[in-house]
Length: 306
Length: 145
Image 1 (cartoon, rainbow over the protein chains, first blue to last red):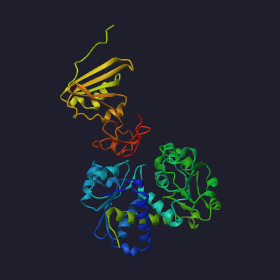
Image 2 (image 1 turned 30 degrees about the vertical axis):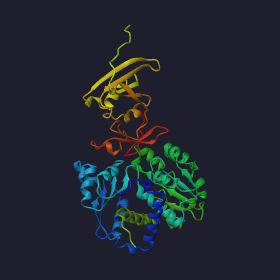
Image 3 (image 1 turned 120 degrees about the vertical axis):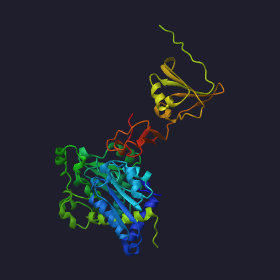
Image 4 (image 1 turned 90 degrees about the vertical axis):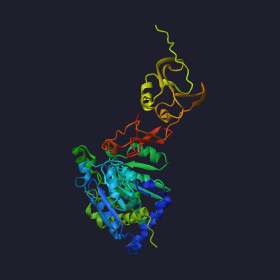
């Protein structure tokens, strides 16, 4: 039985198959409309996350399956002190597959040790968020046509942003990838990722402070939110959150085919005026998030649709 | 001054752990769970050593298959392990870094699931043998000695 804990759980070949399946689902949704009839997805969200939970649920409903679950720890037995391992064992009896979000890092891995059905890590603290990475890869490949030979700008909170860390890990497996890391000094990419991933793999990168300096050379601009919950100090958050705002003026400097991605939700780091720019791909990205989760559910359940 | 001449009789079967850093023998005693073994254990502290100045030695008289020595490689790979059978040293074991260590060190990441679920084993995995990096199996936090 297979689980998804990290985006690197899939080899590049397996990932290509998963993304091909997602593209086939996008092209032929009717073909998959009853693929999971009679199957149940349990969404165990020990902390709230509207979009990740709903996209998993939408994926299962699109496949003809059904969903059950909870959306905060307060409404689960965790509030009575039940362990993750007990919850996993119990829910395995009710559902065919589980998507779990938990504020503690490694909780989905614990669940995977005790569950008798596949577990999808839907985010564990600041550690991993693999389905977001799969979404990002599908979006880049579907719109740009490739996952190699790309210059990718990562902008905003590169220190605490786990989506950025996971995306770097996933993309360095492809040829000729370059990164431009755009952040304030305080939110630079952690040294261990620069050293252990980029330097070790001889992946070229540069660090810049101004978005305007980076934008003309990018194939992909990945914007991130400066997340309030990652700060201990509100003053620091308020001081930094507006540093990197993408607006129409900055978009004038961008190449014609550049795509703008954002894991969402945005606060104000992308001005609403950018939404109408054809290069704005973040809402398409949300749609691709459903397709890739549909492909993931089918893959983990071992369901093949001919 | 007392002459350093304490000696113990030789073993017929068991282990002599030599060149333990002085003062570390009790830590090793705990990690190897020697307190749970019903066998003769001798701990020699602060023995003189040409190489180290002072060292600790542990002698354990037991069947040679009852102790898992892998953890020693994590604690101190400079320890010499002499394996004795039929009154003779049959092997001087070379210590290597264990791939996985369980319940020897604790994850200090306050966001790790082990911080709230007390029944979980604390498991660390060797992720970078060259730089001796162990990471928590659950949250991947690096262990800093």
